[in-house]
Image (tube, rainbow, N blue to C red; front, side, top):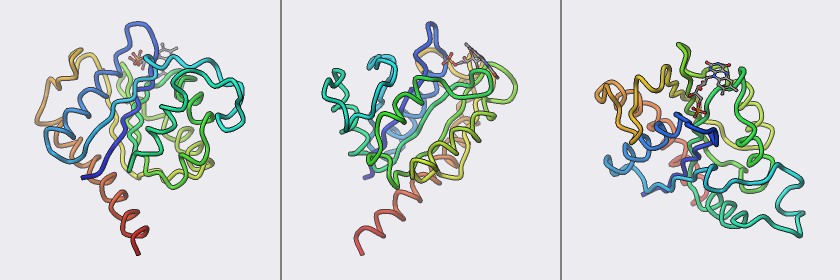
Length: 187
Ligand SMILES: Cc1cc2nc3c(=O)[nH]c(=O)nc-3n(C[C@H](O)[C@H](O)[C@H](O)COP(=O)(O)O)c2cc1C
């Protein structure tokens, strides 16, 4: 069974996008689609980027553990809110922090907003950054508009059937890329 890391990237007070991370974790686990590690950037509370991990002598607590989790993941789902048309600094902070760990890593992007467009304007900037760092960005979307009307605080979808159908299509693409990579590496 593949292993997926879900990065919940909002560290904002009263954040809502974490609900989507909780939902996707449960969706994957209940469907026996993968094992899941939910990596919550609020819990890590990394300092603002000073240098990449491999060049640091004074390593922030938990940084090695974070890098190891990304390394161990067969695939990653980044759950990101939209802030002023972009993704949050907390997410850029950890992308820049690592390098080799992202190489050829299948990454699917789930975007979140409280408006009508589901944070989809984040896609172009985040996709470009991930491409620059040589990750493998999965061509699938999971936009969540009006997040607090769609998911409760525990990550339950208020319209479960609809959410599950969209999640299934989203996750299918990530799992395909994970499987394709596995086949290439076992040749
Ligand atoms: C600083 C800031 C900027 C925002 N900019 C946008 C935006 O450009 N487009 C949008 O649809 N929503 C925007 N929002 C609303 C967020 O999408 C909404 O608050 C969402 O819940 C954010 O995720 P979070 O609660 O996990 O932090 C913004 C919110 C904040 C705090």
